[in-house]
Length: 351
Ligand code: AMP
Ligand code: MG
Image (cartoon, rainbow, N blue to C red; front, side, top):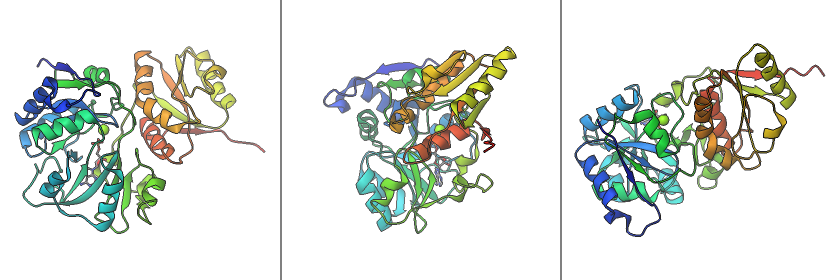
């Protein structure tokens, strides 16, 4: 299959009448799959009402069939078509954060949406993305749009059209290139069928932000205790992994340098993941700064790109600094821990 690349300037007026947007919307109406930018990462979009379109998403990504997809909507009328119940808490969260990087799990309306999209569950995860191109395409095609990240399952999520092309060229009909995404980590997933609502996946909207709008928000135990089974089907899988073995290092920079030195002495090509503040303090084959530590939003927005760059530069092992799990730091550490397959090396302090 020839994958078309449709370049769109997200800042032009009247995006809905732009020919590339019309082309993408028409492909979706024909049950083809199209990658498009959202404010979090690039999504692989397909008609959420149609089993064939959903099968195309799962097979292009190599995604396990028991991992349900987030359904993207362009306005509140579309929400009423697919969910049967919206709690007061959910209404408040939508009012505060939609469009935006927040996904709400709600009761699904019986007889709507492809069962494959929701992996046979009686609930559905819904979000209204805050990106002019995604919204224009959804409104134009007038369909609920299933859109997981547009990467090969297991690899770092794509934050540019180039990343999508590298993973999915030849497997999907088109890629809408609207430039790099902004938030850089996926949406926060909150289960609103429970009281109080539960964070199933940390993301672009922090627990602190949610608690400014509704009093209590719980966190899925599996996000704290690595032994507990996650409530969200997708959270059990390894994700975001770079090609080389990746270890998070908790301790001093000299300890991390020592780990790198030992492996370099054995002839291995070592990568270090740090931030702008400390990149000049390390010596290794590849030292990459992922944003600024003092601005965790910048770390989130560069995270996946940095992991992919280690692949391009072909290192044998990556050592990475950890981040405080505060605010968006919680999503950063969730993604980094998964990328590392939970491999953490801790410095033991003698004193
Ligand atoms: P992704 O599309 O890869 O960004 O992931 C979507 C996340 O939402 C995965 O972790 C899914 O398991 C989760 N998810 C989707 N639908 C539901 C649902 N109905 N209940 C719980 N989690 C869900
Ligand atoms: Mg994903």
